[in-house]
Structure formats: structure tokens, C-alpha cells
Image (tube, rainbow, N blue to C red; front, top):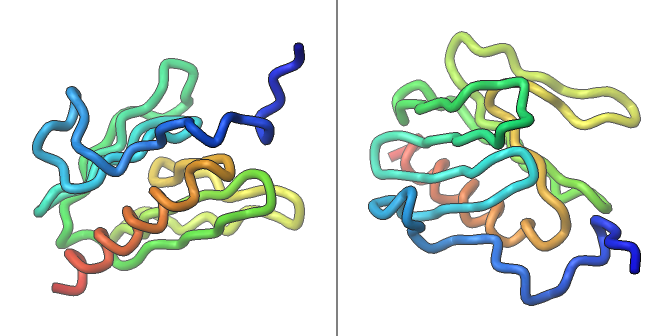
Length: 124
């Protein structure tokens, strides 16, 4: 049997609840290239081993926005931060920078919850 990335079981848990690694987070999303955890005063990105980027903690006061695209098969969420250039990607590629995480269709709802929670804190 071939395991295609867009053919995942609908029972796949993509987060939204605190996890063992992020027990105090309000929203936790497990994505392809890392975990996004939203806290009251910062956002944490914990990368998978194969990532080219390091783990990050982004203070809420440095967040200027969030770019979300659900995509057709692969979507992304990018946290816009002071002094970090926004990456727009290309015609056939998604953006890639230290503040970008990618997800498949099963991660869309969690990514939307994370986006809303981040914007609520950044604008508050």
C-alpha cells in the first residue's frame, strides 16, 4: 500500500490542545516541518530534525501579522515578525523562512485556530 500525503486518515490528530511538550500553550499544531504553539505572550516553533531552521520563540510584541494559505494539497502559515523579511514564495512554490510552517489538508483547521489566536494576541 502506498501512503500518499494527501490520502491521510481523517482521524489524524493535528493538535489544538496543549501537548506534553507545550502544556501551557493555548493552541498547539503539529505540522510537516514542526510544531506551532501559541502562548499568551509568545509563539514557539519547534522544528523537526530534518528542518534547515532552528527552534524559535517569537514575542507577541514583535509579531506584525500572520500569512495563512490553506493551499490545494499543501498550505502554510507564516508569522510576520519585525526584522524578519517576509517570504512570498514563487509561482509554484510556497514561502520558506524561519517563521513558516507547512501543513497538509488535515492541518488547515488547526492552522486557522493558530492564526486567529496569534492575531488576537498581537492586536490586543
